[in-house]
Length: 459
Image 1 (tube, rainbow, N blue to C red):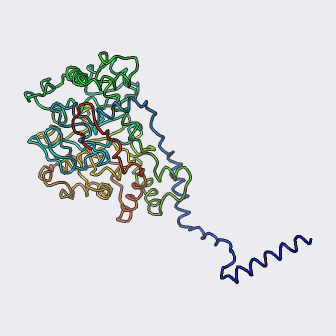
Image 2: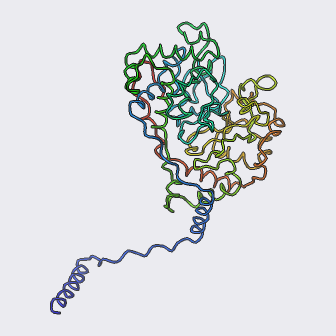
Image 3: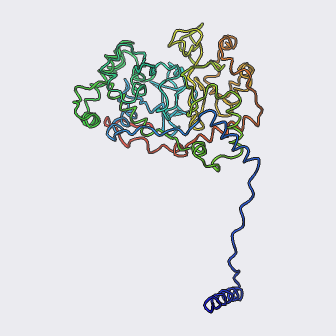
């Protein structure tokens, strides 16, 4: 009892002493503010909708051996893969533009400069927008028309047909993504170049002679001892002389899947239970996204199409086209792969992760901003008829086709009831911005310092 008495006296003395010295006694922290009932209801609604739609955080990409990543990184940025040694895969997929090029339509072989400042050659533009390189581990359909895809039986369908042999396909470790690098090198407009160009032995191969072109690329790469060492380190036990270009394409895929998977987003953290990750605007956008038919197409964790379907979403056609329709300036999209006229002008439903970073949008880059592409889905027929072509660069504005009725003839009818106001548009955009991994904003460390060929690096 006496000890407790002197303890109380000491506490009182310290309080008086602190007051005499001008210091306030320690006070308890203020109580937390009461919960916002509107926000709490939004959180509960969004969680319920996400649960009903079986949405989960996107998993991380595969673990790829470092030697394969190193080889793939070099090949991605080395212009040695192009006929005239003047363009690399990275020229249209620049780290400084979120692995795109920041323009509606890519400028390939013969262009000058980088990104939006790149000027096209006499041949003009590539017919389609440079697709995103992010999170390819979540898809098995590649390119806007899905011409490279993993089929249900585990085989890979590509434009190469039988030229992509079973032995080459056996090299692929990452499904259809491993085949991705096999084809830009065989496009004259993208990388191969034309016949008769001095110093371009790749241009001499006839269109469609993929086996000959791929073999010639391996001869080129084998001329650099550093590449031989890198290939054999990436594929232990296999001599470079026994490798094909499938080994190169597989390495590029390993690089993409190792270095360009970004899934740590506010939305994923929200799904993992952290209510603080989304703003009220983003919560409203998520609710709208899951209730106005957006998820009829964007239905997976990555927000692409679960069944691998392609959709005609009534986007205008501009640019040189793919040789379809009168004058050859149209692009029939998925029909070019399947031959099915019901899939005319249907294109891949792109995954929405990190979409904030990859403008412009659409198979021909028809929409300059995220606001513009989102707004397109508000009464799409009306939006198509009133498309604002001024949002694309001047060189493309005169290429807009007057084919609205043809586009609407096969556009997907599930989109017709979608309507929302400006506030809804802004909320949807805010939600889409919550799908951004902050680490994806700065990719300057992705490129190598040098490549074995010694050619310049586009970064």
